[in-house]
Length: 411
Image 1 (cartoon, rainbow, N blue to C red):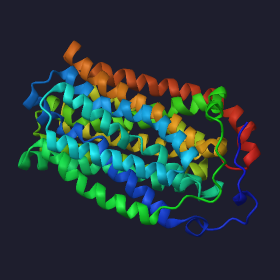
Image 2 (image 1 turned 30 degrees about the horizontal axis):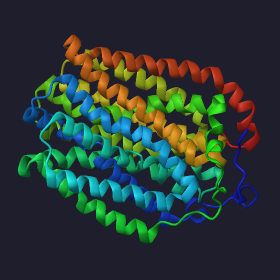
Image 3 (image 1 turned 120 degrees about the vertical axis):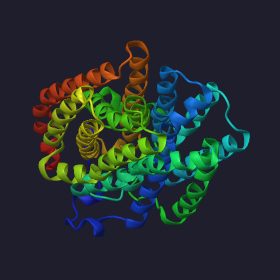
Image 4 (image 1 turned 135 degrees about the horizontal axis):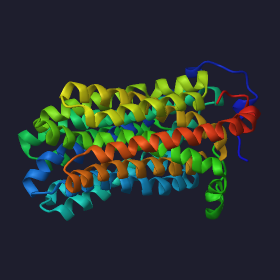
């Protein structure tokens, strides 16, 4: 069993800001924030792209889901790179790929559904930033501050708000492919800041054989954590990508207004992620997650009954609040159990979250095309939250009696 054993374990506990390296934490946040902005950019642009290319509901759902799936798979690759070459270097490589890909897409243009899918694969490198930014920040902080460190770095998922706010308006003014080129400007600025501010922590584990990185998968705990994150983060990113389509199709909103509504929902979920980590530090990640799954299931199951926009918005806000807290709570638990494998575990757990997001985004599109309603997609995902709650109740006693007790950290 892997547990946290760093120099911070025997050192006197100190305040959060004094215990780590704040320039790296800021750099991790900025990198994550801008990467997430472009990762989900096809969601806010989807109504415009679909109209221009004549896409079906299923094609729209698949288009916004492909970056999520690509990002999920690439998170494992990035998790390996973090442990092999260090998070700073891995992050620099990933950012360069994304900037080059977007610039090329802007220059060449995209005029087919296949082209949007290819772009989605490139954007997956931005989504895979998760497996780099979080270990980059986490390795600087002791166990008692892991929830806050991971939560603040993870709050970079607020970049989805920027995409929802600005992408539809810029597309209306300049065309949707121009948005891809314009995104390269802030990405390049953050890339330069990252190179100067980020620093690898001195307590990084020594590189291992490739096969050894997947040893955590032999533990049931790894699979449980992956499953829980597939619901919390999967729900968050799946909704972030799909809400512009939902609002335009269900309530007839313009792409710009749908972007504003999406931004409000996504901002809510992003804002509470660090609060979720801090809450988990205080009351335990298990207890926080139990509340999260109940609230998320009820809110998502209620969405199909919402006949008016205000009611639907209210339910989405509640769901995003719960899912944001859940994201922070899961990553309060991960470093407590798998500190020596935090790089690959961040990649594996993040991959599971991306797979959950791919499922939700694509299933909503297929549900709309096959049944004429988004309702089945919401009902099934709400059911998955209930399953996750039952699983958490099953394992919580064992966790608290074994690795939780061993670390002396509330889980």
